[in-house]
Length: 466
Image: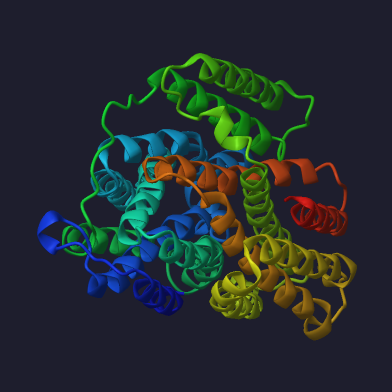
């Protein structure tokens, strides 16, 4: 994907007729390629970290003698902090400037990743995972704010976003694939080497490759709104995560879920009356943006759900090893890369709305095939799993890339952090909400079928949106 980003960014450079002098902190045309690659690597590593403990969880449980509830919390800790603080992270980027916020977020992320790698016990590891999420919540929207400064012209920025949209799906896939390989050949602790290396490299290179972005004058951080959003989102997500181990009617799941929903409702009410709201409600009333965020949430949820269900099926149902399971998803990654590379030209020719809809429809077809044949115990891999594992990522990469362009279309530069926070929040909350809802669907095949139907409905909605 880095090579893809380079090609798109170089195309974008030719579309941009001006470049500011390096003395004022702006990025010259010659520097846009390495700047995009650096920011893209950071984005991939943030999402890589989200999924890097999925496959090694059983081994971590045995090492630390953890029960199911503890493993669920450990797996979700990074995503809970990440999703809960993203809107606030977007405001930090808009208020203090993208590069400054990026540096601060990377410092927290790097320190937490190092602590996780050497954690002597489960409590240290859990705290470190929360710390990673806090750093990521500041880093992700800041990276997009800097990206806007690297490509100030709308045409160039749109082309860059077409590639950027596929990076998150790539990062999630890489986390699932490499975590299985690493845990099988070495220790799960080496999974943290990737984010540490990328973050440390970014900290060193950022002052030289990235433009200095000015802070937003006169903007407050809306701390009450941030507290309500972060606490409400985290509690509600945690309640949904716990439905994997507890009944929906249990106090363990219902108490955090209802408290979280209540705090989110309070946040929305407070934002209506805030002088400088963290999330202006009018930002979400744009139908095209609402459809784009829905597509992003659904795409992230569909790919994450498929990875979880098929990983469990292959290891528990068919007796495959972690290494064999990771190998089974290699075609998934290849299709993802090819589709991500093709997304930019397709969006330029047919428009982001059409590509989003077609990508969702293609992914729905892949999910339907997996539901029909992929989970059958004795169906050969070649025609039972492989067709779905090719169509799903091909559609997901295209729809995610196009939806990213739709979600940021027409956003003012001083609201880039807000758009990035909304996009990443949709991407983080989507898998949690959808996976919890699918637990009530019954069998794994039924869960995939329901997800396929949701993709098809979203494709139709996207086509009908003007």
